[in-house]
Length: 210
Ligand code: ADP
Ligand code: MG
Ligand code: MG
Image: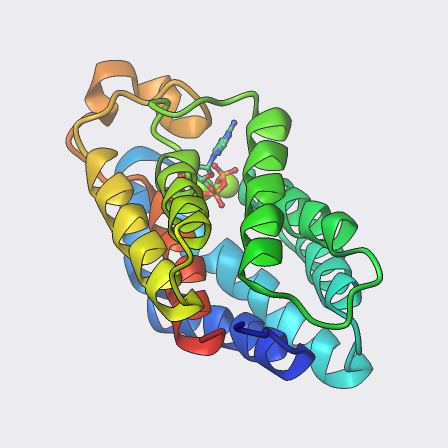
């Protein structure tokens, strides 16, 4: 079976940081339309700090990588996305326990816990025009592909496509959570910034973990 080792997990976080850096302006422009124009800046500040932390501490267990990532995001990102992504990574850390590597089933469980954590922390549901609208279908696609016995590469490919569809589905939605909800009906017609950044998290997983 597929094994995700510690090197692959470091690669995942680094690749996510790289995608955020490359798309910082896109994320900020999306947030300018329905928020306060800082999502790219927030995520870039946070993920740059995460890369620095992981380079200096080089955590050797999955739970430690996710813990340091989550804690660094919480302490460096001021906006809503800091505590939400922070919660996601801290939940993954808790589920990883003392495992030294992960398989596809483990990864699906970690991402399910991340999703539940974000939903609880943000008191949001699918359809509220948030990062959940991309993360939730991605986790469902990952779970069903793994349950069907698909290789991790195929399962993560399905998760990325589901995230991309969920991201696109946020465009017509009216926001019910976060700053975009202050706009009411005027939030419709714009893609959610957080649904966009979380799709990069899945894309980074597909490139780095399989
Ligand atoms: P802020 O809104 O504080 O400036 P960011 O711009 O960094 O923070 O992040 C905005 C993104 O956070 C939104 O696009 C949305 O996806 C996500 N978000 C905001 N509030 C919530 C919530 N309550 N639950 C889930 N996601 C949320
Ligand atoms: Mg913002
Ligand atoms: Mg802000």
